[in-house]
Length: 441
Image 1 (cartoon, rainbow, N blue to C red):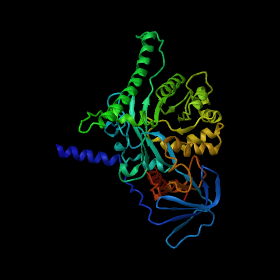
Image 2: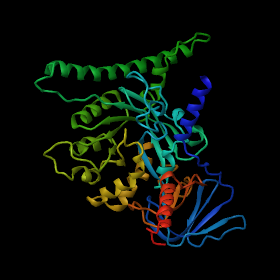
Image 3: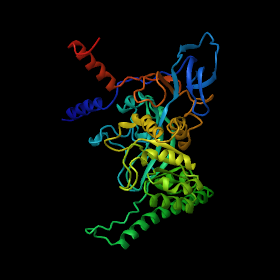
Image 4: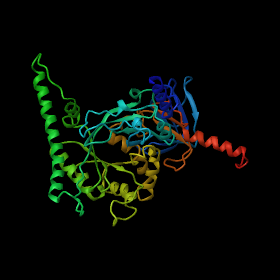
């Protein structure tokens, strides 16, 4: 019986993992000659060369002379674009939403600050090749569930193990802000006063959490001075120290104006550094966000407005409104089942924002350098600059095109496989209809 169970699990694991081999470590310098470089940080350079070695960009200029040990690729007229970065995803943490055994993004309970996304990350996920074949080469994998979900990790979409795939951990702590809505429906059992008290209690619990972490930190400091005295550790409080004491980033998941305003007031009161995730109503509070230097991760552009009386195009125009007001922002796709595999649509979200007022260069920045800045990895990725990681792709089409023709992709100088299950099926059925005479040669 046990052998049968193990065999069944083995077959299941084969069905939810990809068979692609991770890119081999860069051994020789590479020059890409004559490309159109979309640097993002400065300008678009046409007919320039880019030299990268040992996973880093070394030179960007015209007519770079190649040494004997350097490989040279002619990419004349092709576009070289920094890898797109998805700021809020569950990639690597969930494979099939309806299959419990493939979901590893949430723990039981509402207070899980010690949860780390990268240790649960599956580098063999079949969603990885699908995602990176559209230019998304780096993602921020985020736990979910409860009031405090845990710590996210910036992951490169290539690598044998989660350790090799991790670019940065932690990238932030994630808190789901309490709903501030009062339900006035006829069938509601709780009174308006009771609902308001519950909301205030949820926020007080977060205040108490901050207080407890600081008190715990002070106890650790005090007892560390006494030689030989043992300190009983609290894993949850200890895991909060980087965010409460050291002021690392806290991602607050909030959409409504009341939620955002409440979260900002909480952060000011407790002297914490926060980022708003979702932010459907962020356009209503731009002065508050700018004053407190709070970025916004916009959760999907292609969606309907929050309220019936709002213009139908408001979500598409939100990036432009935030840019116009001076709010730092980046773009994201919607997360959660059944959308965990739609991260590849990130460039399409940017192009839709560009169609509603956002400049194309800003749209590209919103899924590259702006995202890197918000995640705190802009010293490594997000633009084509000397000294940064060679994490970019070569395309026949300009950035954010609906049907990109990506020729090659590199993550830290390692060339990655751009094949995926959809491409294999396309070739398979193309051949089927060719043999039936229903497809032109």
